[in-house]
Image (cartoon, rainbow, N blue to C red; front, side, top):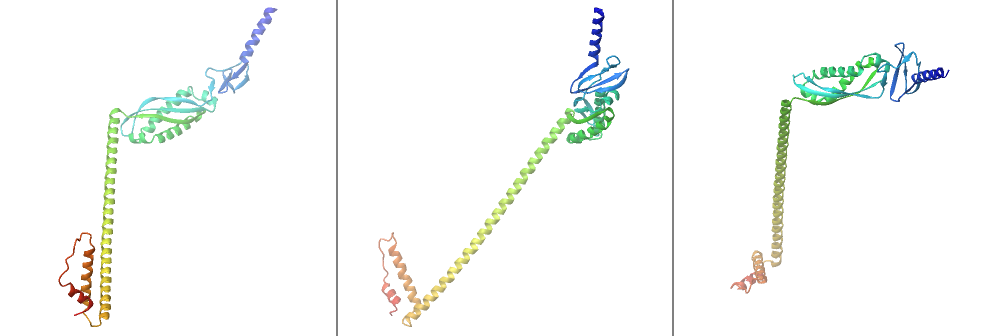
Length: 293
């Protein structure tokens, strides 16, 4: 009797252990009954038929976003250049039934499909295009993979080309070309700077010449105006003197004599003058100044 109870207890424990399933948060488990799909266990506590139901091998599906690291492969571009390419593919299983029953090994299937699609895309492009349009390659590969894997219940979320490496001889040629382009740009920039500096210098010299010419012109005008005013003043002075003398003397002789006496006075005021020798005709000059004959 005791052995029977123990046997029943063991059987009950086994049935309970097989019938109670605790699924982790990031997984979905497939359930088969008599070898046929029965249902999907979601995260948490689940009960299944412990005798007729089972979890198939590989039936524990990770529903998180997963990563496939594409192996480095050699691709021939449209201009017959060999490039070594590797990349990353991010995917997420949206339908566990399709992912398990739609393809035998969806991970390997996605990896193989990504490799062949990448060769087809880059095979239509030149080397320069593949190096400068990595975003275009990523976008086109994403669309192709997402459409192809839809029947497998898988969503391709991102595609990233990690590296595109041309052969060493092409890399050296590209490096030399890049150096030549940089040198050319530097020479162009230098020449442009020199040209601009020459233009600025010429503009400055032109402006200086214009200002100088304008200054000379203005100075000449001012000098002419001053001469004209002086002539007018002398004419007025001569008129005034003539009116003052009223026939008692020559006004021109009067003005010349006055200028003569003024200059003698300026000579006497000079700090370098020790003494002044007066001319013998000073008296006659004074008589001419006052109008005596």
